[in-house]
Image 1 (cartoon, one colour):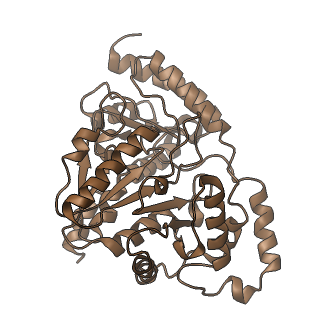
Image 2 (image 1 turned 180 degrees about the vertical axis):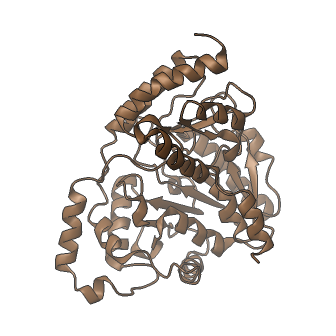
Length: 397
């Protein structure tokens, strides 16, 4: 028999993955070209062309016994040094390889952080709407998620509400900007407000409260609103990064943790992260792709398709009567559900072979998430289906 805790996790198994499997079922019935699957954030644009060249260079230049063998649990020093230098050049920071750990994607990075800092019963505040797996990552280490609801108009954090949620057990706050599922970027004033509250709460409770910045979409931005880099505003910040989206490499599971040297108890923290990376079973990040990303740090996939998809869908959905905050980054939008029961609305959409994820899965209902990381052709063809859906839910042609 499986454990009681796993039985609970099975009950709440990812709605996103369930919709992905539903898409495969509908594809078999209606044909992939007639199913409009906006459920999963799986990049549709290819990796930069240079990636294949770099892979071949690494395979040719590196000794196989070194390249495919173990290394420090923190990762190759050369990869960590390259990442530290790139962050310093871009953000004017002072990272060294001693503050970088190569991880199995951002998910591995987050689990490594929570294993290191959480005691049973500790609380982690997260800004809704949020990536649904945060709940599981925190629960893995017997922590509790505390949800901070957003401003309902902008979907940005409501700082007054946020400030009331701290207790003696508050250990961390998660930030995800550009945000999944909204595409909202938290501006500098918002970040300064969050960090000011964190400094005050650290003083009040007399212990460290960490900021955990989950940044897989940092480079997927469609305006001049660049996401602030959080270690510039708060010393006790962990930056979790993934190359899954920016280099279109989700299956390679490669990312890193960046920790500023001025974090309280830096050496002990880094020791804890290194042990956590090992004992969680990761041991080390994929060796080949540590070497690859070290040579591709400043690359990014061509996001023009995502920008165009965003523009087309935002224009057409608002024309049809849907209300939505226009995304500034990532590849998601989060319109309001015309039905107060967002799961029921997504069921209605499925009648027209449109697969969406209900907002209640992200801790803030009354909306639905649409992942527009699909082909231009699929987006254009979906408009007719959205028109039928709008006629159904709004009762007008």
